[in-house]
Length: 79
Image (cartoon, rainbow, N blue to C red; front, side):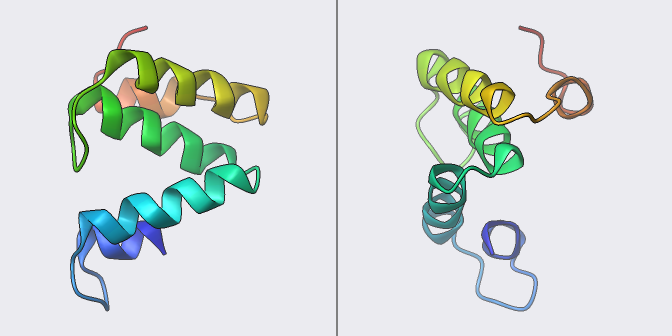
């Protein structure tokens, strides 16, 4: 649902809703959602830019078993 709200696919575009859904998914153990939140914080996309929170979500996604490297590479993010 976060991706739909972030892009406006089939629903009204709302970064607030996107963040809300990504946070819920992250709390439920979805590693990709945690990684996306990290990217959003790192880039300041829909959220205030915050490197510490970005790293927190990157770490969380790795702990949840998600392979961050492809996503970070695609986004041009180095750690």
